[in-house]
Image (cartoon, rainbow, N blue to C red; front, side, top):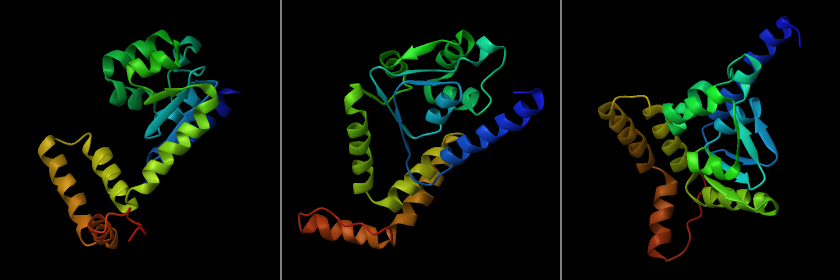
Length: 187
């Protein structure tokens, strides 16, 4: 790409990653093959990352004389801490799935052939929970992460209060009393 093309393209990738991270519901990255550079940044924008055993992941931009430009320098340190993130970014290393799991980038590693099933299981588990509760929990986690603890706790309480007058909460109470699974409707 020409310099002008790069100047147009990289911010677009950043917008995609930020849009993905900003979705109000939980997102899952199922990574097989290589997720390097922008692919890693897409995975970092998700709430859950499941890697196939054969997957490779990393931010190799510094080996090209550039830096991650779609959120990697900000999302990775928030996920695994600045010390590990600096190692990942400064060395431009591409890590195996086991190393990514050990460093906290991956939530789970599964055999390659089981990746789709594992991602579907996590998605089903999330879908079985209250959708409004998950949205509010995500909001509390994401918005509270950079707030002072006292303000973050206030935000958590605001989000909790928002669940109190929902049909989903009443359904969960009825289901518990009837010893059945709740049928959430997102209301």
